[in-house]
Image (tube, rainbow over all chains, first blue to last red; front, top):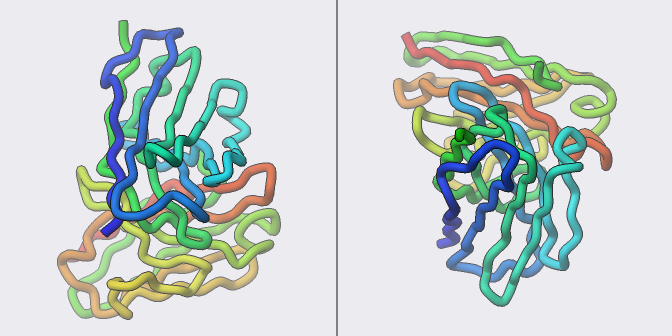
Length: 116
Length: 111
């Protein structure tokens, strides 16, 4: 059974960098696409970006200047960095694995609050 | 404002059928057969219900079905059950520039 688990600080100060890691268990990361998706409290979903196991990335144009997604297949982990955060970046952050056009496996989510 | 348009809410009685629409453009929904649908209960992660417009992942009841016509995709839930009450989101491939775009979500109430 594939499982994903997000980890990282739950509180980040404005203008600093948000960093989260997703640890994958139950399967190899090879041959899959891996995404980060976020959801502000009480609002809808927003795709942040994806990384292929080979390292190829693609980011949401609205976040592209601030986002970096990296992968370490030896540790079965991929990571998200979002720089220069503001209160608008406060959200539940999910990691997920692609199944064709959808995301089948999801982490439980990590709530990140941006506040001084 | 979301890229894809969904009704804010829909409702139905147990046993009935409901359809949730998801309207985009020829650059996303209408241009590709890459629409997916997610069910989200409060405090839970989204669950994939439909992918590639019409396909159901393993474990999803066949009461859930997807379709598409022009720039509008639809999720139909037949034989409504109390546990179907949740938020539903559509998502479409938006081309290489805007890889994935979501709808704003629809709250389904089972009366």
